[in-house]
Image (tube, rainbow, N blue to C red; front, side, top):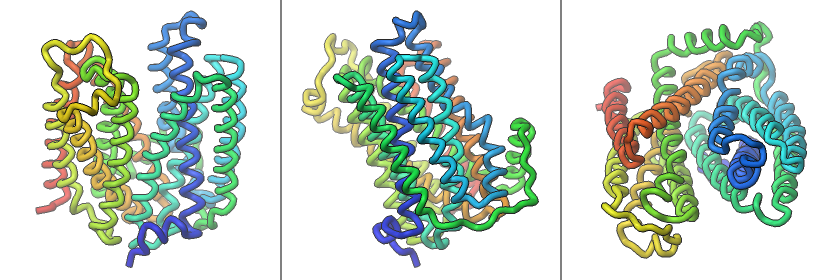
Length: 427
């Protein structure tokens, strides 16, 4: 029987892992958003480079390690004991945080871009390890709650890091504050990793190859041979495509459609993050520790329906206001609460959708293959997020409005819901 989320979070098995991953995600987003704000408002023009190109390139640099390192990292994780690899990864994060502090203080755009790539590599390695080690730390009936905590904590950490990076970096001594926070978080994450329980011994027969193209092909082929695992990977990747699309378009939606200032973006990000956490916890309550995809098609349908209503609710007025409203003014209109309610409903369904799929990957894969299965998932997630950026950019170039982009996502998610119902044979 499931232990329950409160007791699980305080347990020796999960608490060190939760803290280490939480601090790492905060660090990633603290630096990413601080860098974006610095580049747009200060450093872009000084460097003689287009700020928008720099920001777009930075997003690609952070995702690139998922393609380059996931396959090789999975071989390391399956060959060696995982807690030792996680400790080494968190030690490397402290060095990266020190490099981040130098690049910020030196106002070096090239240095910041390099740090972003290294943070992406750190996230690639630790993200793969945290999901692949959960079945070794927890009983099967605790996996749903364990994944709910990790998933909810991840989005809360994204929220905290993003807001802190944007708010702090342009204040007086902002660079010093952000640098100090990054070093403190990295040190805290490493300290937490020292308390990680020892995982299962690795398989020394696994061969590690530096040829990431061949390794990537091999692990994707391995996952495709297991139909249930491959369907779970596709389902998780679709969730990240939706998330990437919404999160990337919040600023343009707030400014150009809803005519609300930057605090409106923060409000939407906050609601989205809270919803994912709430949906993750709800999933644990509904499944009661049983790893099953039975709610996945209905959660996908819920995402599609809320996405449709979100599209309807953000359709712009014929003549939008010429000045941006404050958040207080924005919330004074009842129609805008509908927008936030739709976003909350969509993200709750998202949490309910994604948690059982992660648990399914962990339970249905063997100890010897689990890290490589998680790696194939990471690679597909990254590919779907890149596809989101490319398709969204193409649609916007063709004159499609931001609300219409959300309509396209809603229609596609409705198709995914019906496909999931058929593919998972849920009546």
